[in-house]
Image (cartoon, rainbow, N blue to C red):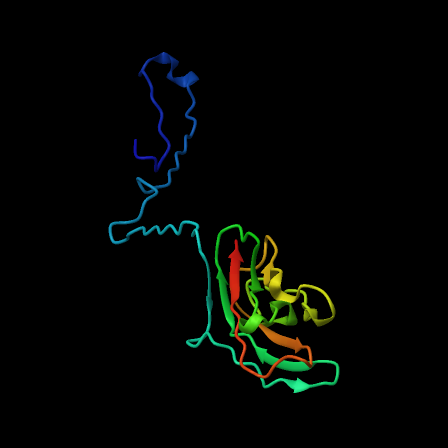
Length: 193
């Protein structure tokens, strides 16, 4: 049977007249033997797993020393300002958990209280969900200034991944009775992530 014409079978006896021919049509479609690539093809599969990411921060300057302006007499106090060295923060962690960078100053040399130092944080380069910390007023009229740990910048859980640069304007207000001289303190930065 070729499938190209009708076909019938008979026994050759007297009953052949009661067996009228009935056409039978057969159709077929040729298909490949598998679902893979042909002989001249290759299947390439690449998998990129979720990256753990990292949290890093660094003072973005070769020189870590900040020199404030010469103190100017404002009548009620002596005023000096300067800029904190930029702090670069990168957060590419999965899940983007919260992070923060804080600063705390000690007393100045010569017995000058560190409470006289304050700052106004800023985000110099947006990224990683960074928000500036709340300004801290110098404690010349009361308060602890930067002798109590204060937030320079932070981000909440679910922030965008990326890199930011944080900064701050430093604000030093001294009593007008402060003796002339050079005074030095250390500001310690701490990151929580």
